[in-house]
Amino acid sequence: MSIECSHCHALHWKAESLTSSTLADIKFGMCCYQGKISLIPLDQPPHDLLKYLTGQDDVSKTFRDQIRTYNYALAMTSVGRNLNYSINQDGRGPYTFVLEGQLNHLAGSLLPAEGVAPVYAQLYIHDSDVALQHRMQNTHNRHLNPMVLSDLHNMLENQHPGVQLYKQAYTLTCDMPPEDQCRIALRFQENTDRRRYQDPLPTVREIAVILPGDRDTPTNCQDIILFRKYDGTHQRIRDSHPFYL
Ligand SMILES: [Zn+2]
Image (cartoon, rainbow, N blue to C red; front, side, top):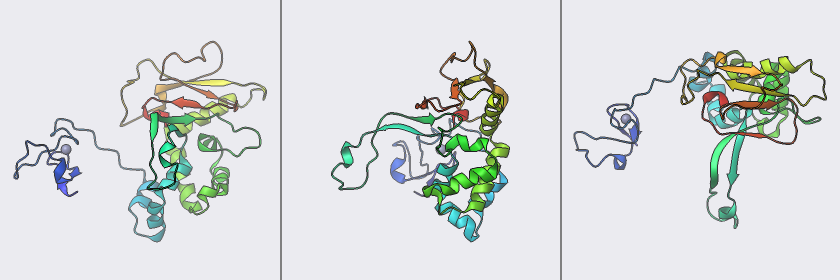
């Protein structure tokens, strides 16, 4: 996989080249459609993440080996999917992931059910030390480095607009009586470009937090209704807007 597209510099196998290629001019269609599509380069990661992504010290190297576990530990939603288990039933052969329908984000309530430890976005309404304590108690995370987890939590808290939205929703509902099963709508404002996935400068202002009342039902498929208290269900979110993460 060492042949570079002359337009976007993506690396390919030779067999992926278009049939119109010549030895002197190898063309690829699957990356940038022969230079017809050019995307804005991704932003540089925040400093705290960049140092672990590029560092040559032991902590950074171990971080990169365990990067999927870190990603999972810090995620705000879980993966929603219908799996087909029939393929792996006899336990032979390599594990095969067979998905039926769409892959989507699964969002729970703002607060966990009583007596249950907070997970996913619920961890972001706590301060960093409490969130770290909960994450380290999770058996999947016990081998992770608490210092790295704490750095990344703080980075998300300071820079991720979604974390601010969760905190805002939590603060707005703090004084409500506990028996209220309140719903909060995160509503996309009228002029938001709904087709956009990668926004170079996403802002919280494009989403409004709306409190219960006659306006708490979704007006279109882009809205998210957050439940403050767990009622036994989860919400599936299919849209690809970056804020859905
Ligand atoms: Zn290309």
